[in-house]
Length: 68
Image (tube, rainbow, N blue to C red; front, side):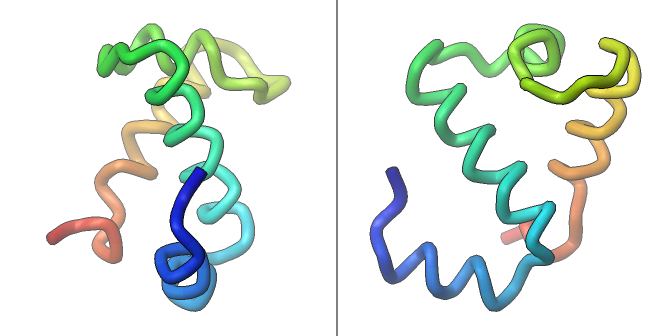
């Protein structure tokens, strides 16, 4: 889904779990074309409650290494 240059760079900058979360998030955005945090949290394949997934996504999006 991501070009190889971005994959290599992101793998070096992010932890394994953060990189996998980013890949899942990019996939969900490409498939559903929705940017609503609640919708993305409901589609995430994590085995935790909805509110926990939503908070997890919020924290992930606010990571310093993802800020431009």
